[in-house]
Image (cartoon, rainbow, N blue to C red; front, side):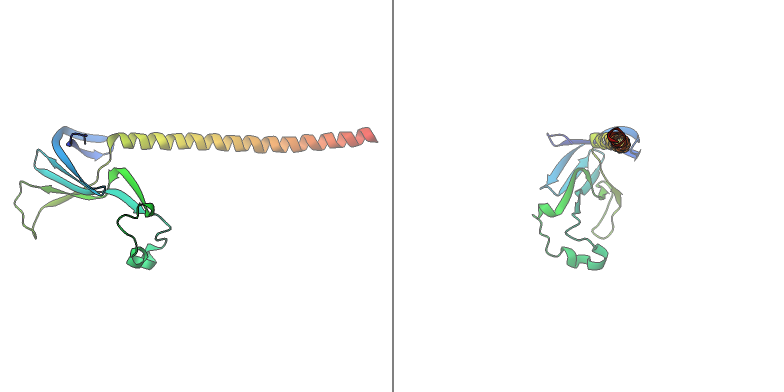
Amino acid sequence: MNDDLTASARLCESKDQCSGAAVAGTWLGFYDQAIKVDLENGKRFLTNWRYSLKEYVQSEPIKTGARGISDVQIDDYDKFYSQCDRTMIGFIHDKQSPSTMTEHNLECFYGVKESAEEEIQKNLAQKAVDEAKRKEELAKEEMLGKDYAELASHVTIKEKDNNE
């Protein structure tokens, strides 16, 4: 998706394996909630941006059901986590196939910004490196603490020996 409202899409079997050439099209955003992409091959994609409720809004959704979110309003942004680099599960409609309101051929999809997936993997790798360094530093501090305590006890003993 580009600033000039043009878009392109490729079919991907997995996050690492995409086939075929990109298909051009256009996109339209619906406020900060949803997106529609129309491709030149007649496929229309419609989906919401990914979001989830924060835990404090509804900590036990199975127990409370809809009662837990009945007071959530559309502009309660502080109650949601937004992931604007990906979408919810959406629908693909083939505009070229005949359909009615009750009979239509739909497929499902979800979208992920290509560079976002790379950034996520880099961030996860960096978190793992940072965590390993932190554990190493804690281990060193713990080891130094033991060595220091042992050294201090020897110094104390020697001081006692010297004073006798």
